[in-house]
Length: 463
Ligand SMILES: Nc1ncnc2c1ncn2[C@@H]1O[C@H](COP(=O)(O)OP(=O)(O)OP(=O)(O)O)[C@@H](O)[C@H]1O
Ligand SMILES: [Mg+2]
Image (cartoon, rainbow, N blue to C red; front, side, top):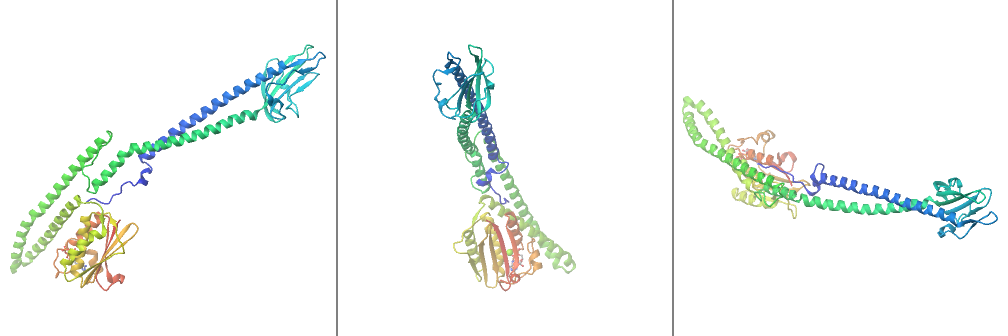
């Protein structure tokens, strides 16, 4: 008997341990390493490159400055013409120069309207550079010395605010980061598409296996990639083999039960003869009882083999009012003097996760009992709950006591010898209910005060 089973719903596909999640983690790691690596190396290379260019420029400026300064005849210094870069004229604009002679003049750029540059960096005829504090924040300074004709030292200093360099690097880093984020999103997006594309055959396989369990589509249909095609064909072979084995065992069980019937009839016959003779009455009655118990077991096994065989070929979900209607009308014909009523909420439809053949058999058993013992009417009510459908079959007959209810589902139990029956109905009903995860409750209507007397069989069926 196939029980209820859950197939992965779309939301459950990304659960911990799923292939999708593994692929996603791999892609995220891959993108993080790739994008992070590009970001780090590109910002480093750019910063180095722009720094070199910046320093080159400053070196050029300090040399230019030295070439533009000349000595006048009276030992003073004079700038022949302004520096080529006009930024040295903008007051406190961040570009400065200064020329000092020991015990003599100091010349300053037009931009240096306040303060002075530290000429420590200009301490040798070789060009040196340093980061000093300038008039408008930290500055990169370049400087060197020359001698005047009367052997005094001239200090040439050029300074540029460091923030210009920092701003250029920061601007580049921000722009690069934006582009890399866009690239990362595009990579992850295409990664997700790739996952969906690569795992599509597995999704198809899941659906095909679900169809197989539902009794549709057998064997597994469709073409699968080379990696899972062997799995599919093995699964098909396994299912076919399994099915054949189950079928064979079922036929054998049926045959065995059948073949026992005739000898059992002979034994019953002999037992009746013995029971008719006053001398052997006691032994005869024991034999009769045992033979009856054996006959019940045989009938039960035959009934289970038959209903199991039917379930194999039908589906795993039943539309609710549709399955009940034919059973109800059949019961109406079988118990002509009883009224069968169906009470549904307006516009009620529901699908329950139970094979329709099994469900119809379960309902037939309970409705047949209700029809047998009802005085006038049997009422079926159905209502929906979030995860299940509740179905109640109530009759207005004598009902059962609590002790009777406790044993009613055992094979061969009967409490009313006047009524025909084999005592197997409830045993089979309980079996079917257990196989499909249905809760079967028998109560007496007395107990919950809904009706006078009568049995209520309640089914809680998974939706
Ligand atoms: N609706 C009911 N009202 C009163 N008693 C019931 C009702 N349903 C079942 N019973 C009692 O429970 C016993 C067992 O029921 P069960 O369906 O297993 O057997 P049966 O109806 O006697 O025989 P079978 O269904 O195999 O033909 C019945 O014999 C009867 O005494
Ligand atoms: Mg019955």
